[in-house]
Picture 1 (spheres, rainbow, N blue to C red):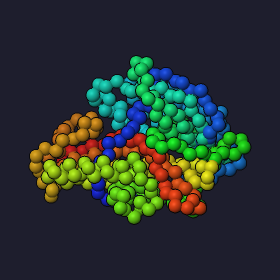
Picture 2: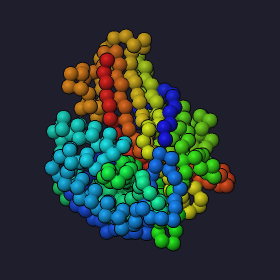
Picture 3: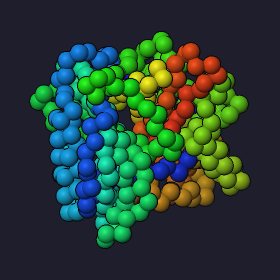
Length: 350
């Protein structure tokens, strides 16, 4: 799945989990949910179980155990071994930032997980875990944040990795499951939904880039990850304009795997990655007064790079989003982007 869009706009300050490692594991596993196998084309579920519920549970616990130990020791190598796709990009940038600033790795405590596992007959395999996550600062727990975590194993010779995570700001609808507890995977091009799942990210991007008056707003619901993201970015663009600077943004698709699970009303939960690319520069791309770099981007600059831009500053973020794509039969319904997590993963001054 590769989604590409173009448009200018303003940057939104992302909410993100940081390094998913926990000092304490509160993992009473619930198998009432399921997991699902992801491929670039997202084949639909079959009757065979190449991945069982018990195997998904064991994979999740192994990840939490290993990532917790890596976070305790600040071990980037160990922490990144079990991450893939957009999650690897985010964690790599975070470990880099933490090492640069000397900040301890954030610890997390995980609550009771629910598993969503589709009944796929072969590789690639993947599944989703819904779990409340709390920051853990020397035993002091922060508020619980409902989170979706996506795990994938592409081929038998590769290990299981956490390939994405999204913080929910809206409730997760009920996911359909069969009598054995397995979920159903959708095709990325399924025509029974309001939008084919492989167009959800591009349509969200149109609203983020152009705002609530964009034609795409007719099928994309307003919210934190859509019109809210546009509003915050547009405000930053206006602030740059006051300083005599040009500000542009682009939310575009990333060529990572996308995942879809059927909901009980015939819709789909869609999980996908996107990039947010931003540029702040002097008009005409000429030298002028120094342009500051955002604090969370500075650690990502090469050691030899200037910490201000004399002509401009580029900053890019990687996001994982969760959206609910309703069935075409749902009168007046829109795609709702119910969660997202991201972090800066690249910076450049010139």
